[in-house]
Image (cartoon, rainbow, N blue to C red; front, side, top):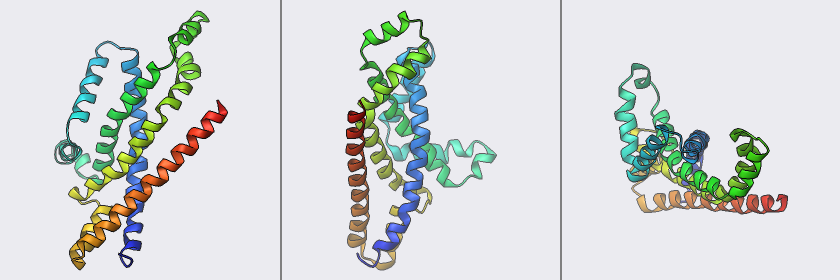
Length: 214
């Protein structure tokens, strides 16, 4: 366990890279989807609801295979891309579906009276969302968004199925090479656990900072 741990820790860089990149894309996507659902935009809102239902109701690994062996084979440019992009896209689409519901619910938690007051002052939707709804909603959504980040990090473990060498893939390789599967997989589990503990700690710190600011 001690011998292989540094090797697995080095592979964590790929895991974190996949997670952070997917998080940025997922958050941007989730905001757009949440706005569409929150304002009940005609035609788009039912489509978003269908999208969310699909990605929340199907396994992540199935979605990865659909993206990599399906969508990425439809275009010559996409077929030349690294499997890493398929992993990032899949994680972003999956996490974006969950995060959009979290953000939409946090939007709905803001007192309607504040919105009516903003409209009485002739604020546009964009203005009162930016100045009133969004700052309050993010405080409510913060714990769930951090949970989504933790799920993203754990979700990167499926990347090995299409040849991306992240931490889980490294663990499988080392296990096959040394036949010490239990010890190496325990190392992998410990690293995932440590990352989750660090993120939970950061979440609590950020929540306290926001409460003091409020």
